[in-house]
Image (cartoon, rainbow, N blue to C red):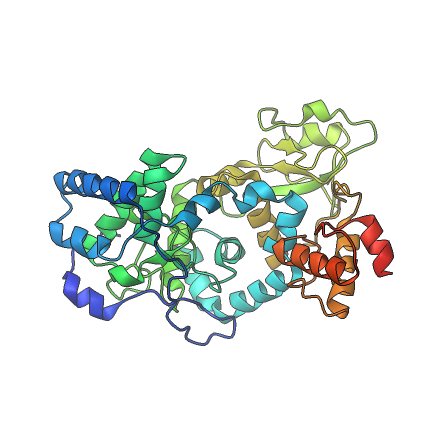
Amino acid sequence: MTITRRRFAATLAAIGLAGCQTTTGAVPAVTRSIARPTPNPAFDAWVASFRRRAAARGIPQATLAVAFRDAGYLPEVIERDRNQFQTRRTLEDYLAISASEDRVRTGRAMLARHRATFAAIDARFGVEPHVVAAIWGVETRFGERLGEYPVVSALATLAFAGQRGSFWESQLMGALRILERGDVAPGRMLGSWAGAMGHTQFIPTSYEAFAVDFDGDGRRDIWGADPTDALASAAAYLARSGWRRGAPWGVEVMLPAGFDAGLAGRGRARSAAAWAGLGLRAAAGGAIPDAGSAALILPAGAGGPGFLIYRNSDVIARYNKSEKYVIAVGHLSDRLAGGPPIRGAFPPDAQGLGIAERRRIQERLTALGFDTGGVDGVIGSQTEAAIRAYERRNGLPETGQATRALLDRLG
């Protein structure tokens, strides 16, 4: 949809980012930024230089003044850039969080609550409701975590000191164009540490290319309490990237004994019949879907779950190229549509523990009064802190590690 230029001042009064869409449907409170700028003269010099470049490319001085009025260097953003969740976690951990049973329950409730909206989006863009909902669920937990970083500061920090400076500068330019058009109030342009915004986490250039005003109110509002425009924008993104309605993204498969793992890999696609001829079978039963050529991936190695992935997996990868992300969105979409959990077993972690054993450690620590932040089998910073607190109270060396010895001691 073509977006007309609107009066900047009028929009500032009319729209903004609501910080947290609750799963109960209540109108969220405005989120305030959690990040505080740190003085950095080199960053300030870079911003001055960038502002000259931006002005030369047509960004008005008034927009630049408002955008950078409270902007500053955010060292936390650089730390996050070098320690990303998707690269730190195993696929098992990533799925335990992104496609948890709680998230499946919430997603099904959201599909029911917004049934008419999802149906209208499907009718226009040809992307199934459970697929759009899975994007929403993985990106922001169905609107619970829209992001609390000031986007201009985050993108300027990344452009100045990040690992892909030219890319981040292009996103910063996109953010300024969004502000110039008045799509969101500058003080409420909040998002992730990487400048991804709204319910379905669009970076600025993706917003410019794919965001739509689906509810017809004259603005492409992906930030507010109502997720309609954000969900439609995600569907528009997938549709224009080549989504095939009714076709699978992938399917979990079981491998026969002695299977040659060298046949796996994205560049080794075969037909469903060819894979069946090699002894592969759908993990949930039935025939392997005949939806064009498919490649076998073994993200946890030959001993872990295997997946045949189809063309639609490449479309999800346009949204986020991480293989873990693609599997998480695909699997969550299947679960939201009534599909089963993953059947294959993941190999034990470096300490020799499976996810069930890690959950038992969390359960027992929680019962003893040490807060692990939940029982999901993922050993994150809060569980590590709980382990250290337990070790300290019991006169043990403080390691923060979930080990078999710890599990045996907890009983």
